[in-house]
Length: 147
Length: 149
Image (cartoon, rainbow over all chains, first blue to last red; front, side, top):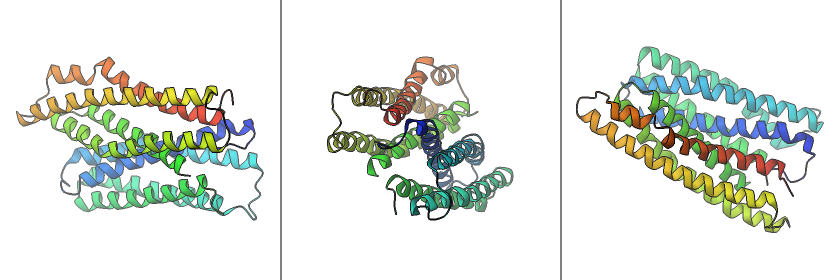
């Protein structure tokens, strides 16, 4: 039921966009779980290492697929940038602000992995929770076509 | 909107479980393996809620959008949902077995054993989880292309 009324030419970019978004949500959720588990055990180096590699190997590639396929389908749908619907604006906001959040979170996870400092782990937990909330708003807005 | 939310919880939660399972397989110490496998349990309520939402709301949408319950894509989605659910459950049991062994080894000096390595790399046990994930992705393919609609 993801998209009942649309030409079949949009199927591939839509599939890649949705799959990329779902993998991104899953990868960020994994980082949330790892970083929250480290809250009481901040000295566990394995959780810092796991968080950093999850962001680098799963979340960043998923972001690229989601954002690239999103731009592909945007060009096919013929939007011009003026008077675009609200849900699309929310999607772009989550995409562009999300990239910044993703990169800062990955940097913080690298710092956590190298330093082992508890504050770095808590920063990763906070940033990844904010990013997951932003992704949730984006999927609700885009699937519900908020106008 | 809530049907798609269910799909995000189902597939997103499955990705989280797959990430944690992969990290458990690559961990150096049994205590690290046990820790990652234990964290998978946090994702299970999300996967369960997502699976329930996708099935119930999906079948409701078939009715309200006047599709036929006999259409190939509807039947395929239900079959794939059952396959994903059943194999995911069996794969989860395999992970639980590995977690219990890893916890025992962690409590007894944290040295790995051939038994744990064999269990973690068991092709049958791992294949069940990966095929469950593949079935979930095929449901997404089915929802977008709707073959036979």
